[in-house]
Amino acid sequence: MTLRIETLGALILRQPAAEVDRFDDELRFLVDRMFETMYRADGQGLAAPQVGRSVRLAIVDVPPGGPDRHVLVNPRILSTSEETAGGIEGCLSIPGVRDVVRRPKSVVIETLTLDGHPFQMWADEELGRCIQHEIDHLEGVLYIDRLSPLKRAMLLKRYQRIHAADRASTSVERLRAEPKP
Ligand code: ZN
Image (tube, rainbow, N blue to C red):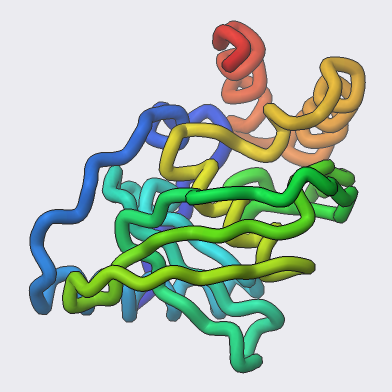
């Protein structure tokens, strides 16, 4: 069973998520459904707020089906490289558009296993980028917030054009009214 993916304009995408404090079957069940939802949507990362659960939980699989499949529970960034790199990003919550985002090239995080055991992880390249993108989601931050105001406005215009037929146009209006992070 797949979950509904929240899209731009949904308030839950803008709220900092709460820590996971129960490591039970319910959590494992949610993770399974998130993987199913992510694969069905052809994504390589998904954060719980994107499926309507405001908890600090995210999954990544970069590239899909590869060895780098991870569940991140209460992840936090310990350090990032000074060196940055630009790379194309998209988001299942902002379908149809993508843009180049500049981020630290590598990242060290501390996160928990599904049983609640802490471990540290170093990641760079696509995996490092994906992990940073998903941890942003847990803070209510979207990749479009990391674009210059001009590029962000252009992207939102493209998004609005693509989704003109549905409710997306009102979502974009609402997003514009939001304060800058
Ligand atoms: Zn995303």
